[in-house]
Length: 300
Image (cartoon, rainbow, N blue to C red; front, side, top):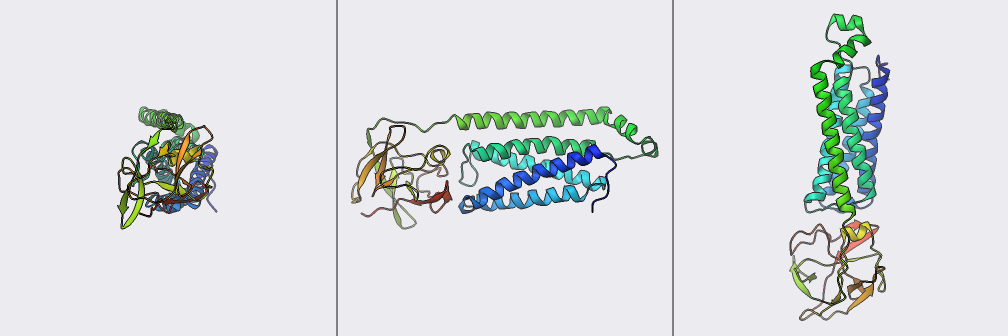
């Protein structure tokens, strides 16, 4: 049992902070089992984030009443939330380990929770009672309030408030930009395709040499990748031209917005945002958006 806290307000803040860390850990654990486990490096990072978040949440509760240790755990928790949020934003801006994140509601929820954790746990670390003199001990709560109003404490709290505001602004701006990015609806003109050998396997590519993929949930007559899915896996639009030496069946399906999507051997075709250069196949074998993704191999 944790020791009773002499600061009920601080104890309540710690409980809420522990809940925030637990919530972001739960979201990452859910995403890990929902398919992120198949993404190279990112999957293990999600699992590490979930385990660390749970551990810090429990440590925050277990150290109630032990002021110095509790403040240290709160500081770690705030830093952990900041690092997690920073990694998420970087994965949207430039990508991490070959994976480029897009807007999702789960990502929005996790980001907001992490901003709240930065502010709440940061304030707990700065303002938690830590009497350092006999006078403060005798004064009790009034003494702690005097310390909280000291110029040094006010500067630290101001810096924390500024950091939290900047984090919220970055999150909001990034997600608004990501959410308003739409899949290009090109005219239904001819679409050049190509082939490329990746680790001995001949795969279909777009005109830039980027690997094309097919989705296990699709049918020969319809794509089942829309919304967030189509941000991760942009559909290949247009009427495909046959690359030299390729013998498979080329065709199209009509997407819900009216655009024609190219197909090969009755599979609607996609690229993957995690591929940053020709010859990469980072999307091959990933379970994401409810189904497996495969590179489009060809017979020549």
